Length: 340
Image (cartoon, rainbow, N blue to C red; front, side, top):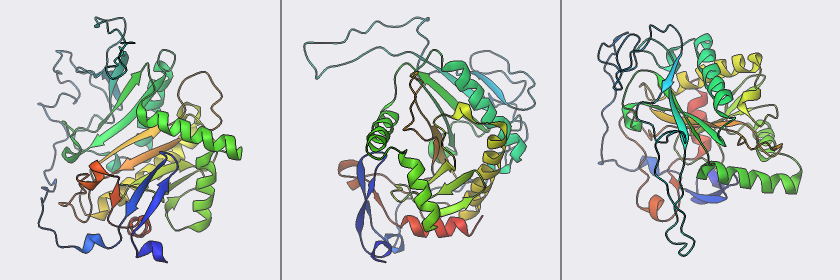
């Protein structure tokens, strides 16, 4: 199959863009930057950690002695609620090249566990269930006042995470961010043409082909997308049509928690390190519309390329032309699948 051996482009229908695939480039000699593998053993409780139970945060607030998940307002939010002090920004109508508008929103932190030394990969499915439920609770709380609620996790210092305590974030906004707006538009165009959601049809084809399926259970599947950008990027998709995460049942969350644990354990086994990544869930905006074109899904973006110390850099051609990857999604799938 030429796609596995020859340079080619693949189309990403979610983003309406192309990616260059260059098989075999991972074999090239590497004399570039080598990252430091994370090997430091963390304590179960760090008295200097702002997120550990009973400790005082930068704001002066003291964390409770929480025993499961814990949610609090981000002490350094990227957006502020409209009821607080804000600068009035007038949109310029005379010059479209200088266009700005005011934003408001809410930013929260979700601590996954009271234990400082754990990651989601080391937690039980029951504990992961609590984490997913905490995210959903935040969506239900924020969706009445905001158009979009982004839940995400940056894991590891390599991804800019400032604290190793297991945690994620929730950012709610009065606007739909760029990535979501693009996915919304492209799924809508596909739905109008085919009368079926893009990602529902896509997953059905992937499950038939079996070329990029990492693992699956009765309700969920993990795949390396045909158009994946990052070396070991994956997408988590439900086998049922659902446009929003807040509509998940407890049974569906339970099976998702089990699937999440399998994927994250495989990631850690890949290079025998605690795999860094950025991940987040995408679903229909809270716009009081039916949104039948939408399908719930999660993106996982790990940056490591060939070892625990060599990462994929998005520079040069990637920044100035288009995204490019060095090993095929099919090869990445086989490596991850062998570790499930």
